[in-house]
Image (tube, rainbow, N blue to C red; front, side, top):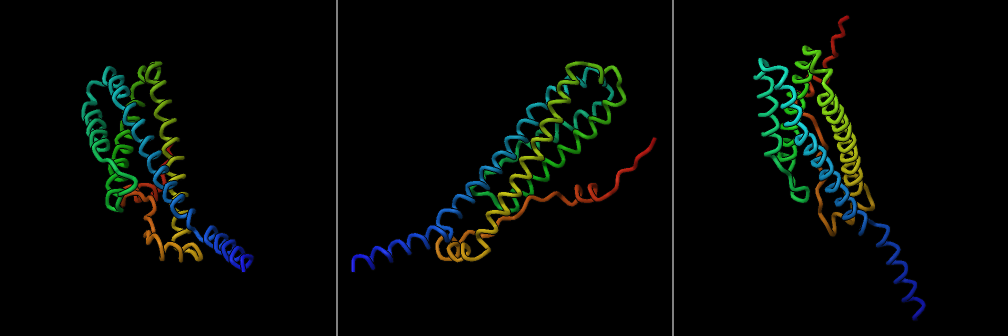
Length: 196
């Protein structure tokens, strides 16, 4: 009798450990940590922008509207925050849109700097530009990791047998994937013109 109870207990333990009891909450934690890393990299970028703008100001005084656009986009991007554990698809979309606007403003600023060879030769500007480029790469990596963690979580909550555990115990909905705004999609889908 005791051996049957022990066998049933071991079987039940094995079944429960393989059905998502731990993997679903762990995957949700991974998604939240990945989103926090994306936010961390965006904050790093936002922290670099004031220094970059100050250096450019000294060289390009008549490009005030471009500089003000960057400052405004930075202010908007840093005003939107997301709580990873309580984020909604609408909050994530608004956050993505503000970060996309900041990326576009920075792109315009880099075009302006091409018109000033003495600025491009400035060591402080070169260092800030390299840091900004590195940060953009970190943002790309962080977003890729976030996308992968959402994919893993969504697989757990939608693919049996772990989806059964989710349906019975957690009832987590499928998470929306990171996406770009319609404006960014149009810009990305358009092939760049190469002129020599």
